[in-house]
Image (cartoon, rainbow, N blue to C red):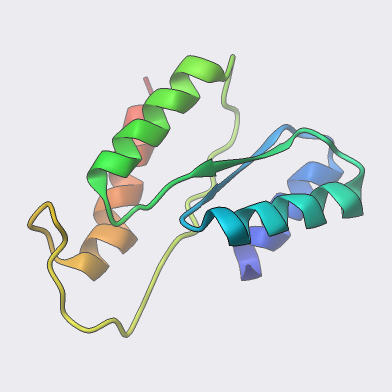
Length: 112
């Protein structure tokens, strides 16, 4: 939703293969279908990613590096605010992990 969806829509309009990295399969697939319909670009795909889980980040990066011949642009857009204090299953503060650690790890893993 929001800025991320607008960026994905613009990339798809430019005929780019566009990977939507989403936490929710249901919401992500709905966005994929909407973007494909609006742009006529069938190369819009969904991959599940939760930047609040470093295991999810590692799995996503591994799949992208294994399955994609190249990666030209990475847009880190996930972020949250106002969540109650919580610790992730990996022992990290949730908001800090979602907003900073996850995207930082993802970027570095995709640099290869």
